[in-house]
Image (cartoon, rainbow, N blue to C red; front, side):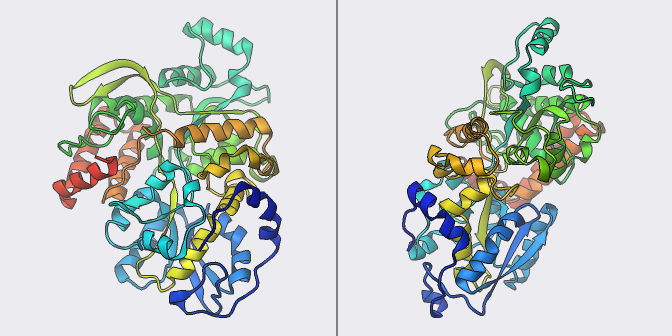
Length: 508
């Protein structure tokens, strides 16, 4: 049984954990294997990861193999191939994949379809390294139908990045006010300010490096997670923060009727505004997947950016990731809006507000129902996600891993020294951590879509967004087409069943 890991023990034991392996114990039966000092000699664990999270595997695989005697077979695929690879194994039930790192939003299909091992009995049997240390929002994304069906691994939410060497310059502030008639906030308070700042800082050399900079940048390429960029705006224009209900902290469906909200004015406004932003973005924006965007943004080519916490990690590494912005970025929550659409009363409500959105929710680890190595899977997952090891992946010591802070202990001032080892200066580390923590501790943060068919709903959203960003469709036409797409998907899965799952996902 795991014992609770304290911050003091983290700091004292860290050198030993990194450089000293455990002694091998005598082999035990699979059913009674010890999770303290297991012997997996002669056995191989097959894990599925994408090209980002393989950094975590590479960091811990040698130590895990040395300490347990087991071997790890890494199945490496790009993000777009993870789902297909898993579903082939689920349908054939071969057990070729033991465990995998997946987006939490996929649990609606994978756990709801009975393809994932329930975690609660395993925790009861073998223990867990400080479950209470996981932030509440992160625990939510591991659940399905009232059960824990995945392991927390990552705290994902979009945040605002901005160039301090642009927005903090008094001369630029004065010129902006003369043109737009107000003082902007840092970070931008709402999407109106984003629009104006993007326009003002677009197309000129405001950082004096001899190159033209642009106003705003974001992920825009189809099939590379661009849909979460428009959901940043949907969360502001289609709802208001509050206890989850039909009208508050709810953006996807009318919870009374299960009618998609995607063709309502709030969604249309979000599509219109993100389409407008493309004119103040760098050339080649439509080719920006998540990696392309991050490398471009830390190269210093834009003022504003919206992404998960990975940009903050890459910022700290000029040599490895070509960062030209180390120490120049500010961090904050997503911009809010001056109005939102009340879909029950069919009217715009003029009100300044801001909604946090758990974009993507976070990556989680699952164990396949068809795995013959459940014990090995459990040990591997809890080995890499315990407090001390997960901190090294989240704070940048292992570089750009795709893992963002998700445990309470990751934000504790007592471990600030480890953040500094990851290349952070104290002020940046505190600002970055606060930006993420404020979102993950918000009880009214909107959660991602987590019902059966989730991948299909989002694929349709991704396709319609791509049409708008490429100028091939208007916001109105795209949203109406998306409504038709979602109605069809809902009908295929069964409207009443989908409604039940959706209400449950909202906690209603």
